[in-house]
Length: 218
Image (cartoon, rainbow, N blue to C red; front, side, top):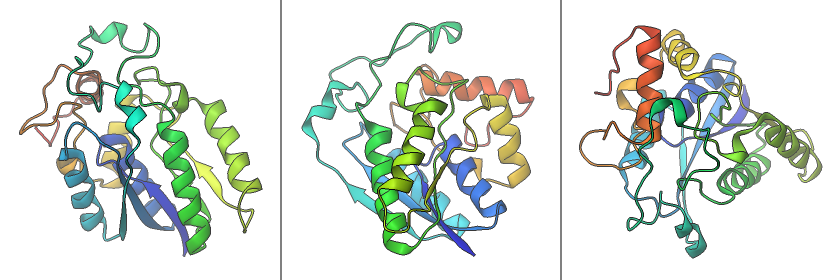
């Protein structure tokens, strides 16, 4: 089986991407990154998802102090609480982490090159999202070229199977793939239960509502 490194955050999108890779015949290796997030809840979810999927999971710790300009790391900043219709329409939000996908993809490509994987898979999508510039298809295509030019094998692909799907379509795909969404965590705030107010919670709720399904993680 072809190996693939899957960037796994423990959320809806990355978990769906992991199970997509399994269905496509890849032998996945999960990569989880602790980069100073407000909470550990998503990392616990990522471990649970990887264990349930039966895939190995590498965990990486990053200490990059400048990332604290993001409200996802700096607890003194308020997280956005926008009406659903305005999410992704008011410019880049405070939850944007500078260069996060660039950093994560670089780590993923490095791991892929080291273990002989043919792909790096991530759950980025550019329809129902918060407006992050590093989720756009043209960015991902450009990084795919970097992966081919800058590695020993020269054959590593960057695959973003959810890039053109909205949250409803992602929820439906996850169901078809048998992804364990009950284990996933999407909330920016952490805590015992999702807050229901942050961008991520609202977009997730929209997806399940439009799919006509209940969220098994609630």
